[in-house]
Image 1 (tube, rainbow, N blue to C red):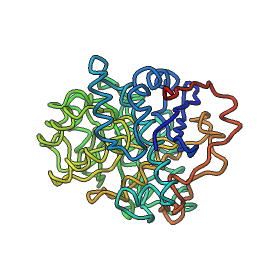
Image 2 (cartoon, one colour):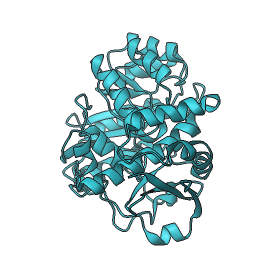
Image 3 (tube, rainbow, N blue to C red):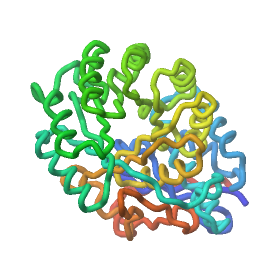
Length: 369
């Protein structure tokens, strides 16, 4: 049974992918958010021609490699993001046909995952962030939290002077010693400043230091990793195996953080996880919004042997991410006791809201007859 059609429904923030087989069965996936409408164009022009006509049961890893080979002059983020949309849609279709959740197709089983509450905000005072975390702890049972330090790709500048020095001890004091605290610098610091901040984090018992230096400067991050005792994490932006090979072989970070959709889907993410497992490195993926990427990451984590301690779970609502509203008929995310459960429904077990689809930009590619 062959892949007959690939359709996309997009806006600038989100693009869902519908993949249909010859028998009419279909599965749903998603490309990575942000400029998603551009990625949808890449999907139809540079990915769909090499996917259509393949069997639903094809060697998907090999077919995705073929896409990269045929589009070898255009490697990079948009191509991998587009590949991820097809990959995730095909896994959904396979799960529906087999009447199994994707996690079982990957060798795992439905389970519950510990989650950390992940703040995206920098325009918030340390005191307000601490109060927000306490409310979330009391309401949903979170026992791990991540907050932002520095400024995003900030060239050593803070969001405002003194914020980093203030927020680290403020959050620890407010939440006490019974929770895990993580912090994300989003490529802000030089190695020297990153080490200074890292020492503050160590003094306050933080356990995870994310992307301290510009992510593309692997040597800078390695210097920080080798200097500090706190676990340094990174890799969310990286989408090429050559870079991942260097990150893992050189142990640039202590915790790797692939993003399932930035990297190009489940197959490519599983390959990176296997490389990390061989090196004894844990995987705590990046999943920083409530589109389908968090759902994909749940199934991924439950299927790999070297899953890290947590699932990243964004705590931002419509005030920060208005585009997240109205995506699904019912939310696939239910948090209780600081944990989230993977459904045992076939495929991803999710239904895209038809009203959202009606308002999106539609494109289609079909197999030649």
